[in-house]
Image (tube, rainbow, N blue to C red; front, side, top):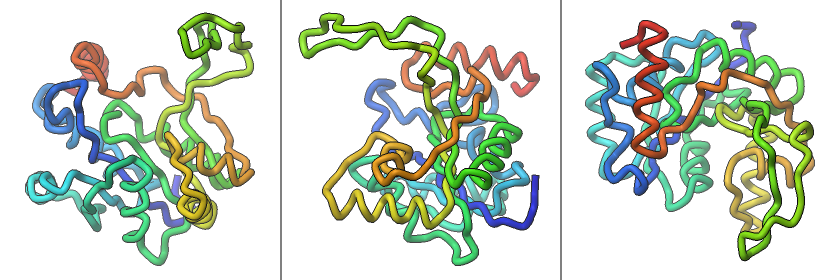
Length: 232
């Protein structure tokens, strides 16, 4: 996919990794770190024109060394991440190129995303203004109260689990962030900010292996997926 539209990817690598106990972005799976594996997918994706990294302030120099070592050509900036995901994205938005038309936000801890999935979400974003990588819900879903007691069964046929990348037309994402800042609203992802401004978002069902590295046991799963792809 390449039709002349300019896509900027923001890769969020500024999390605290508290549940892992160490910086999960530097964890090596095979011969490459999670950071490298994630960046390389976007670097090699034809749909993406530039990449901006949001990183912990103390990691900016280290990530810069990794970028230089690998010769990544699409990375134009490494920005200091904020106290929240939303703030990290906002810091990165301040550095996007003037040519940018669409913005993809991706969790750096999702190294198994495929270039074809990014391109598929990008095509949907062009068609609808916003799109998100998703998977169908397969488990029975329940609503619970503050005490953890079940209050209702949710129709799983009417739900999806959203992941990243989440891609939006630049004007839409900028407007959503500006509205959230004005209202003092803190969302858990970009979709939540865009939803509250009543913009449409298309779900794109992509591979279930696009998981986020959150717990130590996730490393085993990612290792097996990469081995099955011949990527170790």
